Length: 142
Image (cartoon, rainbow, N blue to C red; front, side, top):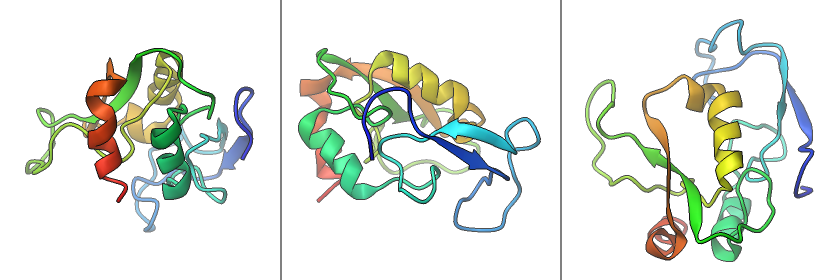
């Protein structure tokens, strides 16, 4: 998959709350649109993360949205929002395998254009020092 901008576009006929099942969509606002294809996404669908590319992003500090290097020490992160969980609670911490790194501008793009991130209380945007979170994120990729 190419890195950088502009991102390749992917047409999504019907968004799904669960990409693995025929569940309800996020609605007409999100259905039938072309979306930027994140670098970390699977080649076939933007709603499934490629574990190989996500691991590459963590190992080489590449933005999971655009694939370009993240030069800054402060990186964008996608975090579990443990305080806003609709039902039940997470038994994990804030960090997960898809937490980052992200350029801050790419993180904003994610939470603006991704129906799953924009329309849920499970995740929240954040930022932090890469040296503080890298090993924890990498531990999810073993």
